[in-house]
Image (tube, rainbow, N blue to C red):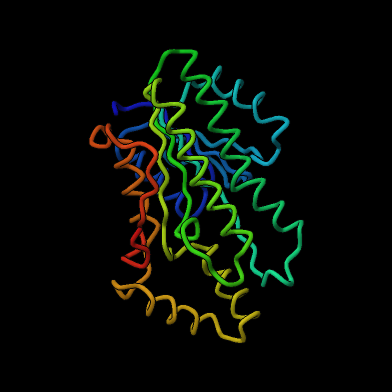
Length: 249
């Protein structure tokens, strides 16, 4: 797509941060939305917005104000997400609610309100949702996260069908084991419930990947950038694995 306005949620860390950087490098203006304020942007084309995406009652009002101020984003990257670790038998309903509020409901609301702005302006666009290989497989200690990421893929497929007549393409990216602060915390939490050290879990992670290593956030951001490009003009409703061969379907 031509250079335009990009919205990235969860852009202050991990995959979201790598996506912000990649789009800035390609000359886009980027609205980086995160619930945490980290100071002023270093790049003149980056707009930092502080908003809690789980505040669903205020999300539409916030989005209207954002569009009035900056225009309609033509590329929306839903990257914000959280995980909680526990075995299902020990899990807490509130943890599930927290994960679904950000991992699913926020994506639903963000996609809906900005798609409405695109349709109202008769504009094409792209929506790219960060799911996970946990959206295709089950993992011990991550039942709530797995369920939420499966939901992201289902939402992506249905939205792709509904928005196709408007030329709004909707796809998901399903990363594998990516070296982010969330993954590092998961290794600590997972170690506690499995009786292992974080280093042992890291070695186990690498041993499960055919490429024998974990991913960097920039490798996922490259696929996101491809989905936003003209080269991906005939792709919609897909859930693309970026897993080093760990997931192959």
